[in-house]
View 1 (cartoon, rainbow, N blue to C red):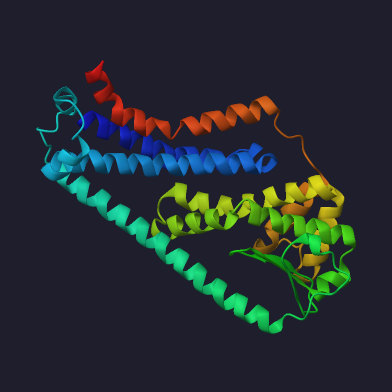
View 2: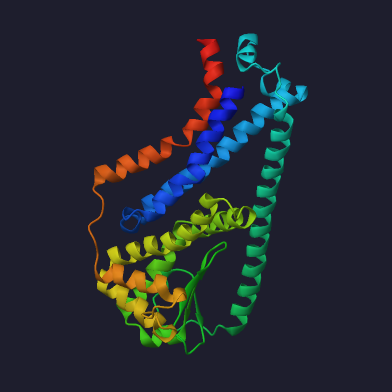
Length: 312
């Protein structure tokens, strides 16, 4: 058991510290935001699985009741292979630490979801009061759409069941039909890919564990990559130039091309659309996706190795 816990700790530390820092310096995530989002999710899943499996092993070693439940269907040889009878002195402290971490993670995620639901409810109530009737000339095929009376051009989506697309009258007056289609395609991609769940998860982990580099980078990169992924969807449908012009028109009053830190992502998105770079090949994307999917299997293999060896 001690060897398993040490290996799980090594894998968790590698996935939580050096790998995220190397990934943030890489160039390819900008070209393949969807693949990059998958890689980040796999890294987070690896760390969480390491903690959960380590919690199960240490709790089984410390508490007889947990041991009986976890190893009830296993033969005696499997139990002996984990050497649960010789409980190290630090196993109790590790079990309590991991249990507190699991409880804190659950609490942070529950708080984030509750806050998001409260904010969403307030936003929907305010929008219903301010929104005029939908103009008859606007195609209904664009899906649930709420037009908000506002001189500033803007468009966003509100998660929920169903997701609500909001566009201001300023955007309807300023954008052309193709630019409006690009904006709505961008927002619909957020809803289709359920990006709100990724944002909630990354925010909860970064808030609960601010000193862990993986979770801090995961939060920052998720907020960035979901926008790039939605931009790609809009550009494939409506063209790179149309999408870039729509982005500029929507954000011109905010200073989209300025160097301020709050506008840096907008400037990066515009530059990326106006100067598209070559993407990864199909084989490279498949290889990256497959390797990332295999990483979360490491904690499971480490945990199950003694049992599989005993059965063999």
